[in-house]
Image (cartoon, rainbow, N blue to C red; front, side, top):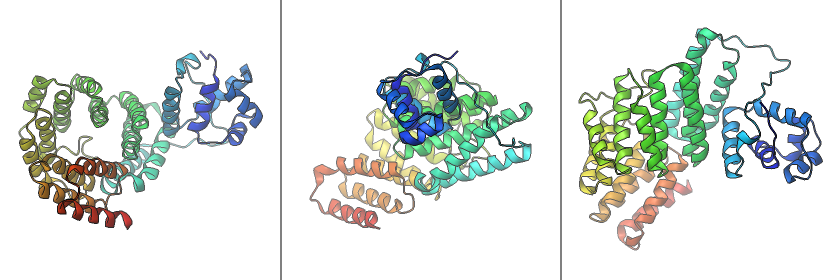
Length: 391
């Protein structure tokens, strides 16, 4: 059932599409003056216009839809007040593509390659390619035979989740959260419980990274309630649940989850083998370090990080750098030279991975080191950072 669009909702839709009023007016088939009147609340939106807006809304790709939801939330627009179900707007004049098992395999291979690319060089380079694949996967779902939909839904879940991580890396956590929500819906449609648990772990990870510890704890609970078959996924959700519970002051639950991790952590694998491909000894040490830090054992946390560093795969440049920055923050009060050296290594790695979130992490680390401004160690660090930033 369709109810009414409102002025803020029309504006949110236009901005989500990244259109000016003139181009948006052409899209919906009205004049720029009319669109301006809608957005200011000067003109009413009649039934024909409501349907035109519904049709535009129904064509939103995942990124535009997520942007719309974020904008609508920021403008205090409850979408349920004006649109309870989206009208289906079919494509006109285009022949339907044929979705086959082979085409799904090609999509899967490409999505996995782009995930590894983003891991290595960061989102600035990879995000446009990832977002294009996300749009491709979601657009093909409408043409997919029913028997193949679970497989394509799984690939789409991976693609949308990858777009979410890229959005987060570009310092767009609200957009990332909306995309993870979409990814989970695709995972549910796929029937793959390992993927469903994995997306909830992703949401847990984002919630911890944005200091929403109660939400992280809830996502951990949800992931643990799902039956999984992949041993790597079982370890991933246990490790991330332990960290979430530690931050949420559920320390007993955190210890229980650390104890639940298998003692047979294998070397890292690739996305085609497991959605939990990053689970490996280095990751376990990193999570253990977080739990130790939250519970007050900074020395133990630093030691765990140092154990993780030589085990991180060379292509996971961002993880190497962020681990070094964490080490810098942990060790500065006791050993400033050690902390500054770790930060310098992280900055040099930023030449290889141009992650905006990595540079933000450095900025926050440098701010925490500001009580030692004027020291030789920080003077040398600033020289290295300036050199990297200028190139």
